[in-house]
Image (cartoon, one colour):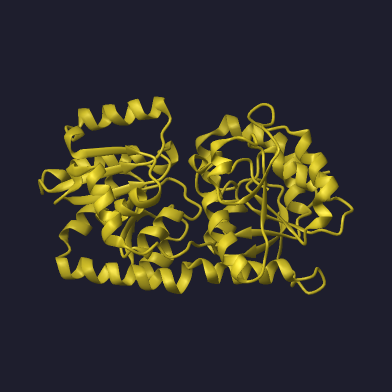
Length: 393
């Protein structure tokens, strides 16, 4: 269950796509129910078995068709997995499956991180209403609420005083990058020849306030003068208003000629961006997992991230990257630390990045863990319930 299969919406649908392939190798068939129009281009291009029920109403995505479909067909499935909260698809799952023998599980995808409460206090007041009448109960009655790492699990407990659910760490990951790195690199350089022969630092993902894109631009400006070969590639979809803000930052900092703006990339262009990158940068204020971080590691690209990316401890421990505070000074310090390393040290970090990917984040391992969790019966599942004050009513 997911609001949309459009990849422009961020990482969850890419995670679903990757898990579907790995689960298929384990004999599991996966269907995806979404609120997309049946004729939407993203549905045709998804390569998934998509049950597109048409868009809902309002930003909440209120969609009675989704509720009716679930009630009618949920028993055709062994389990239902909800991707994200705060929209109607999660509430519909809870309402439709009450009293049914089909268990459901919820990936929160970092949507309970206290960063949102701290930076959007008015929205958090509205979310309290959603929480009390909807999402608290969605999580409370799920067979398990799934987190990608311990950091996400611990932070999720800080957003609401009333919180009770059965927590499990399922991990998360992605597949190995496709072969033919040379062709991918050539495709990217053909589209963006300004990247040729440069020391490219790459941001790839949805350009959003929480991703720290403004921090990265200002930090890059602080170090760019030390090496004329340094260049920043900003790849991903972006809201027009934020795009104007970011363009203005680059222009005011005098680096607009050293930033390549690509928009959203896919296929060989996306992988080619990783292949030409010296390092991947994500100074995010809040990041549940960061699929693009792990994709960079799989390509042997060291990652320069903030300590608000929830898997930063594992990455630093494995020597696969560097982490700092989510501020201009913190991001600048990480870039300077990277630039102070010699070529051999940077190469060793690239090797460590690949090793860390295979050890922790390869999707086949994640799929096996998920299948194990989904296959557990209620009486087999050990209790790990978090309860921060009990029932709200």
